Image 1 (tube, one colour):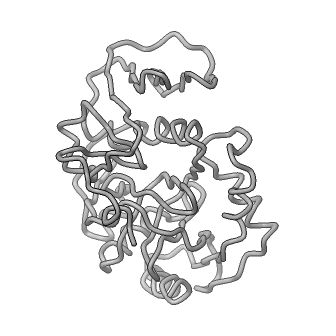
Image 2 (tube, rainbow, N blue to C red):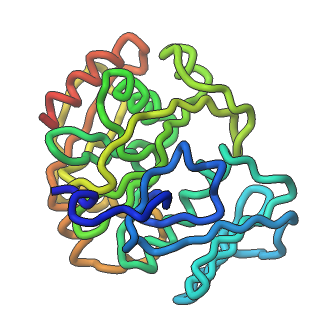
Length: 282
């Protein structure tokens, strides 16, 4: 039974990653209904560049460096203040700015987070992990066009072995957007140009069933990933580069089934790779 059916949603409240977000009115179309029990995070904006020379995180606060500014997080106040030299656009807040703040909040809440997408299949979510340039967003975009549910695009937050849904969008690069024929051009957002594909609703929380790691190869194939290798890869893709808040829980996540999906670096290989992925997680 998904979380929505166990507990009434707060009327009009929205959020993502298991956080109830406030002061995000313009971003509501890309967020999801929030549960009353979700921790509150109020978004604040301030013009400036920030004066932090280094990132830091304590039990009560954190400062995260951005390309042109900083994010100041106050755990006690439940606030995330984005300090940038320009007015923050809604598109920029939803992604990429929200993800690092959500990863730190997850750490404080003893949740785990990963730089990963979430694909809904087989009654749960499969974490999709790939290094930069591995075709992750392209694969997720293709899956969305095939009608597959997308739990998240770039940050996967896990609580009690359940994956928590993120904003309702996938960001593509120019070549992927042109090949797939989708995506709203947002211009320069964060460090790069983005084409945003909106995706449909999914349950706020679903069981995490396993992992798919993306790699380039000579042919389309799926290969099992052993337990030791799973743990190493998951550790390398954690959302916060600190010791896990709950080490035993992290080991349980590494015990889930895992596959490596390989395909040639050709657009023509994408449809069969997506079919191969869906067969593996069925």
